[in-house]
Structures are given as C-alpha cells and as structure tokens.
Image (cartoon, rainbow, N blue to C red; front, side, top):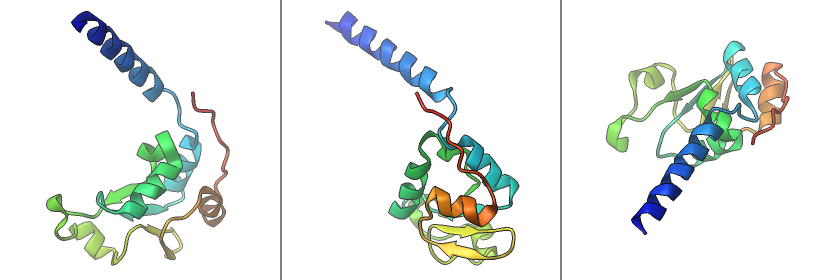
Length: 122
C-alpha cells in the first residue's frame, strides 16, 4: 500500500512539473502588459486580486504584479504607499491612468494596445 501511494505521488509530481513548464494561455499578454508599463498592485489576502490572477491562469506569474501587503496583512509596503494605492486590485498604466477592480483580459489589451492572443494550455 505504501508503495502504491509513493507511485501516485511520483506521478503527480511529474505531471505538475511538466505542466508548469508549458506556456500559459496569456503569457504573451502578460509580457506585453509589462512592456507597455502597466502595473497590477494587489495584496495576497485580497479575494478580487486572486480573481484577477485566476483569470490569467498559469500566466498569472508573468503579470507585472506588485505585492502591497506587509506580512500578516497589517499595513502597506512603501512602494504602494508612494504609488498612492488605496484599494486592491489597482492597475496603473503608463499614461498615468488607474483602474480599481478586476479587469478582464480584453479591457487590459484594449487599454494597453496589447493583443489577447491565446496560447493553448495543456
């Protein structure tokens, strides 16, 4: 029985390792957002920030994201204070405009001039 559990864990680890190396569906969009100067300010404890990241799926790790919350969720980082971030999520764009709240991929693409070309996720 213990050997069976070990085999399942090994197979699961191999699957997770192989799927994480595959490109995400919105990798190109996330890269373009950063190139165009967009910044996503959020907090690890913020449910709407998690929704925004979930929208990008595996590509969320490529977003131009700035964590604003201090450990323990009490207070805000100096970078976010200096940027005047008052709510999460907040997107700040190169032209100085801001959007508070979750933005869908099409809105982000339109705002930045990026393409929403989707890569296929396995």
